[in-house]
Image 1: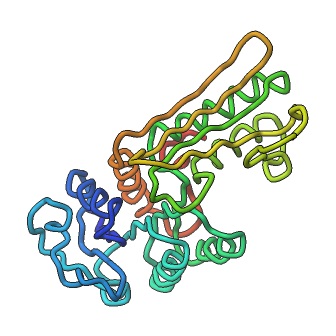
Image 2: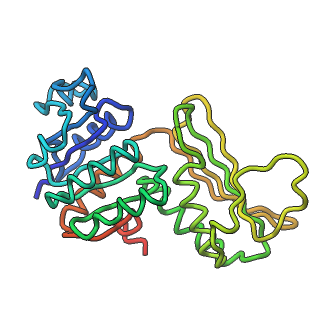
Length: 268
């Protein structure tokens, strides 16, 4: 079965990469593409936007105009846009893959309520490598335990608007679960001045923004005499796009509920 896929944010960096990933994937076909209603690219050919040549899919400015043309929407945009798209999909029973990060707790609650009507796959990172790292991080934290200090470093391009990255937070959740801590209670998102000695239970985050860094993440487990590091470095957005398309073809068979990339990869 070929899964009909729609991509929103089609003219953006990630949108173009997603269009290319759909074109390269077996069992998937791009049948709709979306941009903001005020975009000058409404009506443009989505394939040409992605540098692939014409594919006959015209960019639309309203999801309701193409809601019957796809089975699964892939959305890597911004929280407000994603919330509107998720509601539209839920109303019509369309599935949605969500790579957007930076939701407030209230927005997260609103978004996840749609799982009662349709299937959602939401992940901080759709890279297969990152999701393998998440499993390894939980296992490492469980084994190393409270004898090791845990710090998380992440770097992204200058255009990223949220910090720490959703991936860094997911890594924080993985290690916190491994050592039976509540990340919200122990996370430190920056240090300055006379901070005092490090408290053992804290999990620290360091954020770097600059240039065109696609995404670097390192989790350090540090004890007297040794340090264990688990690192993932992305050199292309295609790693995220391939995973998102894989998630979309997997999600098409689900009726409703909330899933993530760990479910797609059967890592649980």
